[in-house]
Length: 345
Image (tube, rainbow, N blue to C red):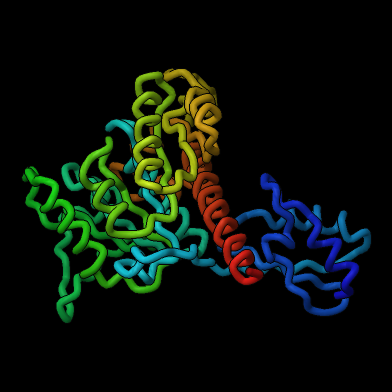
């Protein structure tokens, strides 16, 4: 590839961002009129859009190839507990009942479907729901050489307090016990190499969120809300908590954003609509996605199969796939930018 052509391609601004492909370090030089673009996550789905932009910038017919490999977010001193996880995402909400666990479950399954290796830690100790959502409720944990083996389902590795409780049991623990359990879930489970570790946090701003911020370097938090004013008010408090804990907030998700009829596609804003976007703008945070509500989500949950796999063509599944791609893209491009900056320092 000529230096002039490479310069043209590197000057292309990445869609939705302010940095160029050159600043992100995504253009790889090979030969002739063939360009290789390194996308830093298998979950990025920008090939068609980037091809059009690159062809226009080149001013000539060129061949474009894309390579995808999950990049790791540079982490600090608190990374030793989950050193094999390249990116750690906390899914949180200000209050219960907004579908946080459903979003976390489908985020993990969608990333796995797009080629990433994914683990989920069900940190909602008081109300663990990931085993049911992933269809592995009642599974007994296996210990091998003093290491806990995570349960695997739908391409995702999972650990949950739900595997350690009898049906109907309640967990009545104070902060130190919760801290110890989270430490064990991170330290004593044989996770292997992961592109993404997802924490399904309990609702609110309690002990577990504080413990995790002390134990590990969280790449970023995704805050889930519904459109109602009450839910948005407490979601804003969750954002404030993460800022105090110095955890980057990746953005907001509006779940149950509207009702979408699975038969005719008719839309009804039964809980209002757009409130999360307004809150995101006020907080100067990205809007990561809006997920509609219909019976397909309930059917998927009852079947123990994530919606993105149970009925991939449904409106909720498509919105959740887009959400997963947005999260992976944001995290991975930020990591690529940091890596490029560190390399040139």
